[in-house]
Image 1: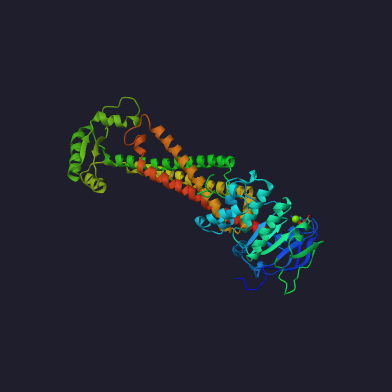
Image 2: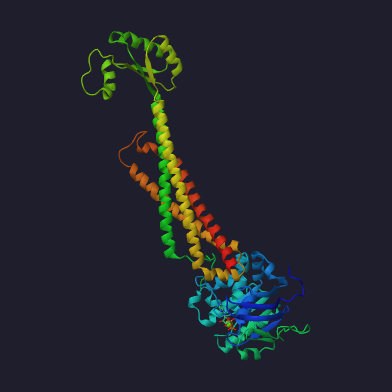
Amino acid sequence: MTSTGAPTLDLQRIGLRYGRGPEVLCDVDLTLPQGSFTFLTGASGAGKSSLLKLAYLSLKPSRGLIHLFGQDVSTLKSSELQVLRRRVGVVLQDFRLIDHLSVWENVALPLRVAGRTRSDYIPDVNELLNWVGLGHRRNALPPTLSGGEKQRCAIARAVIAKPDLLIADEPTGNVDPEIGARLLRLFAEMNRMGATVLIATHDLGLIENVSARTIHLQDGRLSGGRVPANKSGRTT
Amino acid sequence: MIEPLATQQPLLPSRPEQGRALLVVLTVMAFLAALALMFANGADRLSDRWTAQLTQSSTVQLLISSEAQRETQTIATRDILRAAIPEARLTLLSREQSAALIQPWLGDGTLPPDLPIPGVIRIDSEIKLPIETLERQFSEASLKTVIDDHSRFSGQLKQTVGRLVLLGIGLVALIGLAATAVSMFATRAGLAAQRDIIHVLVQAGATDGFIAWLFVGQAARRGLVGAALGAGFAVFVWIFISVGPGQGSVGWRGIMDGFTDGVALILLCTAFAVICAIAAGWSSLRQLRDERRRA
Ligand SMILES: Nc1ncnc2c1ncn2[C@@H]1O[C@H](COP(=O)(O)OP(=O)(O)O)[C@@H](O)[C@H]1O
Ligand SMILES: [Mg+2]
């Protein structure tokens, strides 16, 4: 499966266009070593979300190579891709919670999809919900949650299966700075436990709080995508 | 506070409006299928009863050469029958009774007194007549006879009922085909309506099989409920028709058989649900694959 020591994510000369439009991403090279913590910055419309979509296998690039956990994703069958996707936790700006499922069921979803036994994961889900401060809301339906609660629910769902790669798109976009800082601590905690973290943000204040590698997208081109071998980018 | 959810919530939302409309369609189809099935079963049973009764009674027509010979020839015929099938009950019809039998063919006028009306002997017998032996013996005794064991009639009846049964089975098969199409259509609509949820599931690592299984479960449940309702209505209608006159072995009630019909209906309901489930599974797998190819 994963060759040990291979980067968690490796993008080579990636080009991406939507339909017949112009290239949104152009010759992007990016390596995320195992256990690294990386911020992706860039103005609105620079292509951050598009780059993340490639990373969490929601889009196929128009050209270039993607290696996830050491595997060339273009050669994998759909069932093999699903095994990789289970190792990636994603938090999106619009949260993508399932409205008819309770907070508890939303958070438990990745475990259920992976075929885990329900009785085995009930304590894990309860514990995580308490940790993100949603213990008292576990039977609530997403439409009744506040923005911040929705986000914590989405984050809990992203981390419940202890993903090897955690991707977040503007996670602090619509929460107050207090909660933003708390979220960042959660990501840092996940990173300390071994997860590779990639966060897209245009919130420069967020970046100042953590000493981590920062890469920058401008006009579809990425700067700082390659790291020197001695610098893992892990948070300190 | 409610303890978290001992039973897990279904991943696909129940869409009450669409679900109800679909359930009505499935119920009506199952109702028609159940009626067609009971109809085919009943027709088959009825023809069995009729032919069984017909073959128990036969007639021998004796074409007498003249009225003067009626008595001797009738007795000769009876003796041959009695010797060949001793266990049969023989009834000799009088000239008047025989004339009454052929009246429909001759019209209503009074018959000329010297017209040689054929003699008729009715035979009631559990066993089948040895027709060839009888015919040989009659001709050896120079008796002109026509033996009618109703086999031609019952043959025709069997053929007609056979076609009715085939028609019933054809109807059931057609309804099964329609149920397949309806289930596939509903699954496609469901996949389109739940696109957002499917995306979340895919991102969480759900395989095509996992997602298709959700639709299979939904379709099977819906198919089973629709089939049970439809079959229930059909049974109700059947029983309703059965109330009132029509008793007796070839009456309306004679063509019912609670146990066999019950088993057939349970099999029908099961088949209905299975068909819906297979159609849903097949079409969702195909749809998911096609969408991935387009992406
Ligand atoms: N689904 C899409 N179809 C067409 N164009 C898109 C789509 N998504 C994004 N784009 C375009 O790609 C560019 C980059 O978008 P995006 O990746 O969302 O940037 P960012 O996340 O940095 O704001 C924008 O010009 C946007 O209009
Ligand atoms: Mg974006």
